[in-house]
Image 1: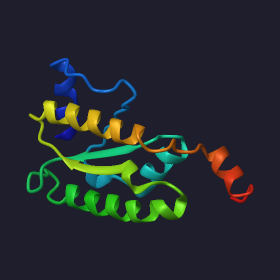
Image 2 (image 1 turned 180 degrees about the horizontal axis):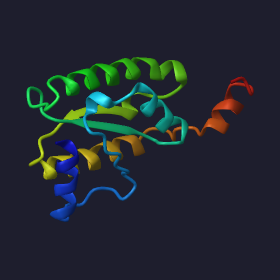
Image 3 (image 1 turned 180 degrees about the vertical axis):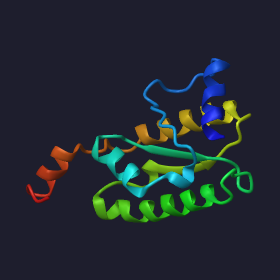
Image 4 (image 1 turned 60 degrees about the vertical axis):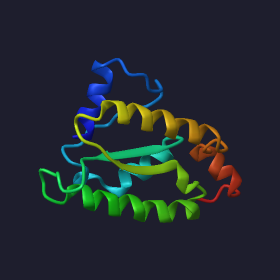
Length: 131
């Protein structure tokens, strides 16, 4: 659903930042918290998780499970030295290409206003080399 919104944004040539990387899952219910954490570990400045509209999940409650996982990870981020504002969850229908592009632009702009997300090497240096 949300992937189709991203696809529609591309088909309609709606502008969203070129640094937005889309990773497709069969359902956001398949989202593992480790995927989010690995993205930050790899240097992502932000992560946007987009699921289908509530009540519209083909897998019944996948999007609700994903939303709970995102909230759980978001609560852990400060303990890892990552601002929780760098992670957001949105619900989109396949027809909301314009909304996908708007959210991508707004989230990217908001993240730009935060200090850069330190790379894993910088985090190690900041923590005195502890891992």
